[in-house]
Length: 412
Image 1 (cartoon, rainbow, N blue to C red):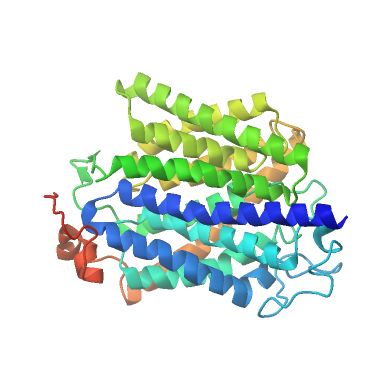
Image 2 (image 1 turned 90 degrees about the vertical axis):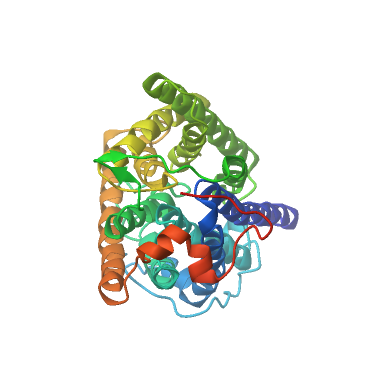
């Protein structure tokens, strides 16, 4: 028993490290798909999110997300107190069915918490003030994410339904939570200067596509921990199946996205290929443990096709999302959550309806909360940099430094 407990815990710690490594991937992807003059600003935001996110999750997030709803509770809101003092059995096989210790539980879940705000960071890149963004992160990661997460992962009201809402690793609880906030933020901020001309979207190329490519590959690797760790043990069958479905969905998403993009635009667009991979990963995340390999390929393929049309649709709405976060994390997050009721072991009408209820619940809380936070900031301190700051770059104006001290490049 002790040997199995140790093996389970080691696997969960490895997965925790892989999810942490995903923040490197997010950083690479975001700076690669944006302009050189904003590199420091994007990196600063990413580092702020993971550091402050972990501290906030320690102070109140963990016990807000896992409050231990009582039998008489409505499963909507409870708080178990500040800090993370472990229970008496927290370091024994009695805790979490021997899958991991209390400390590992906290750290693994804490890595997930910061991801939601990182999704928003990419969508608002190149024109948001750093101060208001930091305030938003504190409120959204510190309070909104763990509170909403308690509704399912904390055994709250969505888990209490006769047919419980199902989200294995966070297509909705992580990706759509970030995606809804990204949508609201992009709408309130407005587009970057030069993004739309005569009503048509203009390409604003990123300054380092090789780095963006490396970021996607790092994220794919990190998903081994993101989904694999969500088994919550080192169970051989469950973990291996989850990793197979995760990888097949990613591969299918990338291939189909590239193919659909080629058929539609007559070019082999690497950025669309990359976002297709991410779309496949987001799409499979809600049900990675429930799907057959064939199901995973279909789910990933549909996600890949959705990416192409979603990116175009976002542009037609005159919403400027430099990294495609809304298409990848929101649209494919919704698709992946619905797919649980269509494919795999849980497929059925009751499950599909339960998935819809979950999606609507998270849409409501995320849209309302992110709007209240960002609209208040917009009307008080402002959330957008000046035209001069945007044109010259946020690195110099917000941070007083450049990313590449010995290299300069003309940018328009």
